[in-house]
Image 1 (cartoon, helix red, strand yellow):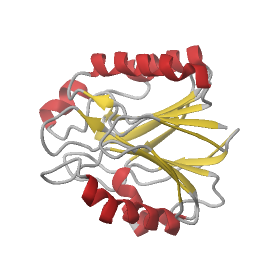
Image 2 (cartoon, one colour; image 1 turned 30 degrees about the horizontal axis):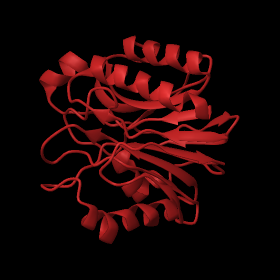
Image 3 (tube, rainbow, N blue to C red; image 1 turned 120 degrees about the vertical axis):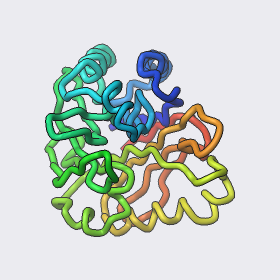
Length: 238
């Protein structure tokens, strides 16, 4: 199985431009014939947390964006996992959606570790796929031990969309290499499952999500990585 992790460079609050950028990236990677493409948290809007932004950019699942991504999944014959602001009658979630090669919605995960004005998810679903048993967590979910123990084992692959940044200077390669990266490895070791992490890369001047992608083994070993502070894609074969 071939996975392609794309830390998509995101223009905040411009979903149409970001979706077009993703289509271009899909064309670029299509010669590699990936089985699954993984994208960051809040892929096409950027990570927004203002009620006014929710009214403008949050949408239901299924909805317009899931339909557009489903069309691309069918065209390129690959699974696509991506994050979005999910609008529901009870409020807005930071969610991640997995779409299969036929354009069907296989799985929706609602972020559990989140702050208001978001509302929180409360469960982790595991599904059977051609990749084995698969689940999704989002960003802060990885760093909460109470969340990690909810994951139903055995599990083959854990997908992890993120929108993570440093306060102030972000990206920050020194901080990444000396501290942050090891934290990720330690947390994945606690889960004990091969984990694919893909972080947003925001087109912003300060405090921006710092991009990059990682594949981490079930024992916490770094198997592959794309450079911190870039939107360079990562292709990994299992």
